Length: 377
Image (cartoon, rainbow, N blue to C red; front, side, top):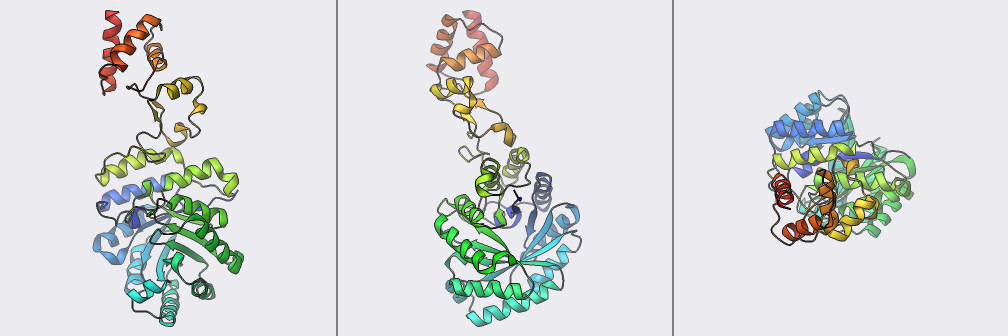
């Protein structure tokens, strides 16, 4: 199976959302973490947007050696110039030019179909004199299909064979993404490297990206933990996990070292001052935690009963929590870990005083309470 290209935009699309700002130093640390993880393309930022963004792209371009470093640019000379200057130290530079396609976006920018095509053609020619170029078609899911094909055809004529389709407003559903990708692949066959960029406004970013992968895209754009505009973007860890477990179905895999996801997520949450997430897939605090007694009993016998996704694959550990929903199985398990016999009377006493009583939330205090009760017993 051929690995899909993982293009991470945590440092651009993810960081530009409210509350997600990072310092130059923090963004460099995230970029280096993404590189170690095996990310194919790191979108370092939008150099024309601010001096800080220019500086961070420049420093990431100097620091990253294996991943391709990408700079975002609008379809403007000044944006492309800034991106080119910031990318000069990069070993494998790439400029991603965002272009409009839908009627609503063209209207907002005062563009006609013709003037938009002319501008795209001119800016592609200009950018190509510097580095590798790819286009990302904003609001592609709401664009007129024939006009969208015309933009891709124009890019191909200008020797740009990398095109990303963006569900910019997060309104598409998987069947629509499937139809869009298949239509574009049928039209352009293997002439183009097609990518997908999804937003999570309907909670479908990962589902839509996976539908696109199944339909034939070669690149998927993601952010760590799914951070990004409004409800966020496709989550890197979810795509990585889905292809890890269902690569045969999707006919694709990734080069990501998924064991490095959780430490980098923790670092990112610290940088953007975000409280730990509980229920987020793979990286949530409760993703591999269980309190229900029936589930704990089964997991202790065979983890696969309730744990098809393995915590160790993602640098995580199983957490069987002693709480008010727990049963006696976890009491026996904890006694055994502490080196005590699982005498039924002792188990009953611990169950009565801990599960039915007040349970310390701190693990050290919980163990001390265990030992104190055992001493009395």
